[in-house]
Image (cartoon, rainbow, N blue to C red; front, side):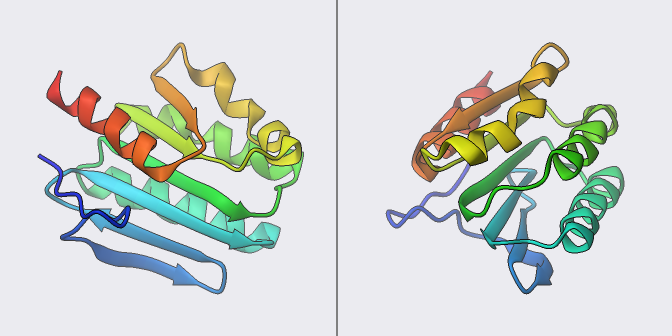
Length: 143
């Protein structure tokens, strides 16, 4: 069961990846990764974070990922395609659901569009609030 604090945080985590505009935390009890993106992320750095997430999920139990892009600038179509291409590998490693927390910004929505095509292989949802994403993950976890 997830442990939620009132200020939109999940407790009992460890930072597993940190870069200038990217923080990735792992919550082992919940088998959850939370990616937090800030401002513009250079293509090389974006891909390093995606590759790290995949490698970590292949070596550790990861059933859920929340990608918090509320404060992220839009990514390029090639980076979006790059990230979407690893989704089948994440599913093979045990991923059950992927939640995006996005701003109500059309450019960010467009840059994340690639992932909507993956809904047939696993569950992908988009939210405008982190708490909504956590609640959705909790519902799936209870099934």
